[in-house]
Length: 110
Image (cartoon, rainbow, N blue to C red; front, top):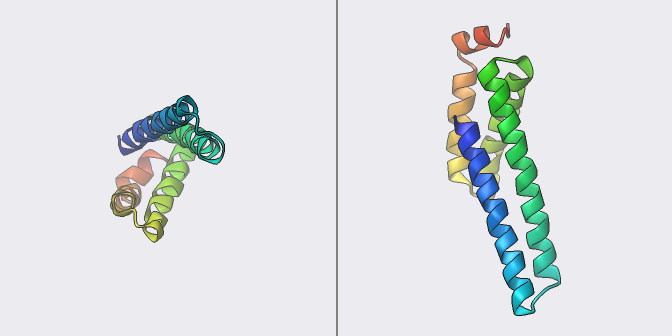
């Protein structure tokens, strides 16, 4: 469920970057700001898609979904380096959950 929420926030962030880019073009300010917001939007769409795929893999019980979830949670824990306390807390919670015996049994991880 946290993966889906993260994906929704990533896609909302992509839409916000797109709005910034559109606004800057409408005002007549383009160039670097427009390029950065376009790149940010594209990056957030890719992240949102990866999170949706991870959520699907976790929901179905595939091993690749388990490992993608672990990687995403580890990246959330590492994000504390850029002062993202929410990502850090969510990463710790997801890592704790994914390391429980019953969860590993569901994904057929020894």
